[in-house]
Length: 110
Length: 119
Image (spheres, each protein chain N blue to C red):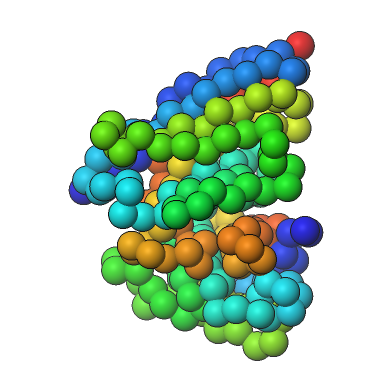
């Protein structure tokens, strides 16, 4: 099973909105509503931002939102802030209780 | 507050073995699917294994790694045998968001423990 495909980098200015894509196949992203997103700052453990495509855990800013169309999921960050500069990963249920992560996207706040 | 604390990492030669532990506080591990995720230096996240009513493994570790739990100690274990250079990574244990959830989201992570496989 190959990793899900994400753009290597995305950038935006403070206050702007950016979207990160996560492309898989009909066997993973397209086959279930079990897509999640994580934020990871250097040297830190990942933080869950979104699960089940659109759900936000308690305490996560509503500036983060998720969506999915066919085999591609997306994470949108609205009102970009300096603290959003980090690596972002998607994840999806694959088959028989196995899971795939995305290749990761470096978000830069200009 | 829910906390996960990993230990047991270190330097091991190729072909060697290591056992990682993850002690949980603030939750009862038997109530949740629990997971191991690793991250090689400078690389992305890589799902390793999940334990719930069954145990599931990535193809890359199947037959070499064993995930188990001791409910009385609220502790998880990852027994890693026949280690390879490509197993070098920070290993995180992580919890699923709610009881019975098997969708692969991980809401609480430990700080990680480093495993280095080298001669």
